[in-house]
Image (cartoon, rainbow, N blue to C red):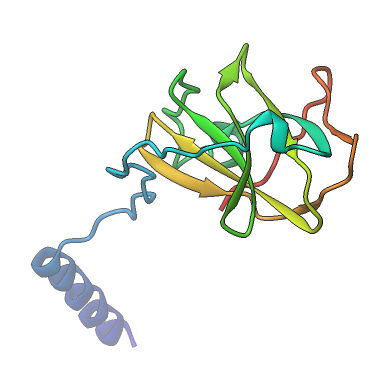
Length: 146
């Protein structure tokens, strides 16, 4: 039995030497995506609306993959119904203050990180409700990103 174990260990060591054994490194979010040109509806086109105060923190959600992430003045957050943009915001004092134009149905959030030059979409959508407020400065809405 010891002979078989010895042969197994020797083969494993030889295989590691030939193909290289290394620890799996976490995937990275770094990309080369250009900053989007998302356009919010004109104020006159908004017959109903809601607001959202959103906090984005990739470092908290993905501690290994986003340990170097930081919020950037060139980041963007947008609300969408399908492919229709309902509102766009840049960060102010660590939060996004999003004014969302009225529409029936599901609203999804999309985030562009200038740090990673990459896009993220919120895992869960929410339903538009006229005059509603999602999150506050004291307790912002924190989406889970995919």
